[in-house]
Picture 1: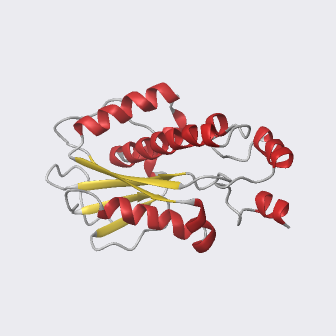
Picture 2: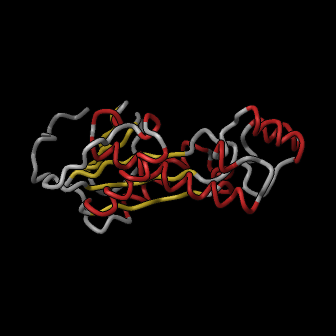
Length: 197
């Protein structure tokens, strides 16, 4: 981490960024960018994967209500197949950052790769556990993507998208074998690609 800045500086307009949906075989990858208000701390922020769905939703509501600003970026399954999942994740992050209503002084991204943006950006491995604004972004990205996959479950019944959100669970792989691939499956991911071949 570049230590030329102090995260304790309340005047620093810090945006946290994270994504959800790199591993699934179906649906989009979704990123969120959040600038928290240091005067309105949100209690309970953590890595979204460690929280129950109900706690995530409650925190997401608080984040959307109390953050200085927040934004979502998404890249759909077709673009993921076209440019690969890493580039799609970075693109979703870039869109989320560029859609923020305020320009951040600094962007901190969870992981080890940074999107190319015009403001100062740094990557932090495990940032969703260490940096509240990244935790907030992690929660918003996951809640947003999970809702979309619940909607996809109605459009493409039988695959179990509402339950596994497109991840390669045993039930999902079984449904793929039984039903074949559907519109939102990522053709470039090997379990899907195998069925095409």
